[in-house]
Image (cartoon, rainbow, N blue to C red; front, top):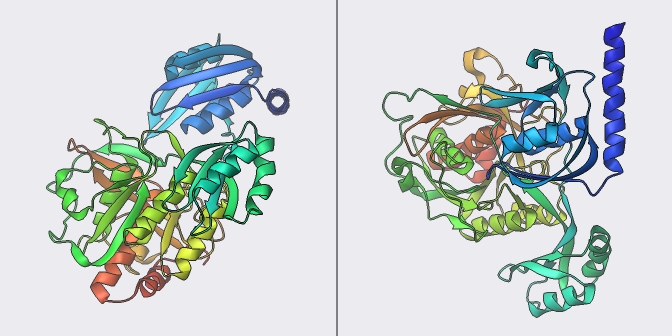
Length: 465
């Protein structure tokens, strides 16, 4: 009976915490993982909603000791993550550990082992509420955007005159919402929509492993210069020298430089190496497009600019191991236009089981990829997708919404510039392997991209498809 009352108390504190959080819209928590910096301005906040925000911002699995609650009132800027936790949690204790690349945070009053109540990550609202994106019609005078912004009381904070795409910032969310209709009805505007943040992609797990004997995988020393160019819309890349001959000059649409890490490879680097692993016998060239720069996140403005830059540079297929963002009308329209012109888009279904629809993977016509428990060891074929004669098993971390079309190996062995080997898991490497297999099949069998897509979908259909 006591346990039942404890459970009800936790649920009750959760409900109270959520209600009180909604009433304090001014509370802010800015957790910048990449910079190891945290800002907070919280007035009388409840513990559970705070832990939900921390879990969402960091990707940590958070557990709290049942019937534990405090009122949090803090204000600080630019503290390290550990300093921030000490200030935020007050008299409570906490412990962090890591298993298979997943960090667990336990918050407790008595013992760390008593922190058994899982805290769900806060569902993030990806809409940047005081911003809109505007696409001018082809041939429209670019000065029109400045006149529109002035008329609507907005600032142009991002502009790409080459594709007629602009980022407008308003005083508040209500002004941005009201402006969409006014913008869409302007004769110089092709489309207007809200802007959305896009989290920096991260593996479900990342673990150091012993370096394999010799090269991690065997590559054909000559990339196929006549085959498809693989577009990699992701973070910056900094691969070991042996992989650079297969890489075209990277494109950066952010104007920011992301310094190479001395510890682990960037997400873009891991995807590039996974692509090469999946087509080692007949590699195409890879075009990396950095849409993140040095930020912990980016926005739909940069993602759209990056996709257009990849296509204009000849990339097809275009691989996007990023997602979870809002349903952007502008990105969806761009993808539909690209599909009509023969561009193949491949995107990750996400690393949160049961999350449901994620974008861009869920747009019609996109090859949406979930992950199996297998390891990338060459192209995806009917043989490799059915190791041991059975169907591939869905990985425990993998999302598998109805629109998912392919299941691919979700584990890849990659190498950092310092020679350290890493095992990376997630729907991201599954997406990279699928994109690479499509290019490999075109090179090997001299077939069209659409024929290659059909073969991959037949060889490795998503569960239940």
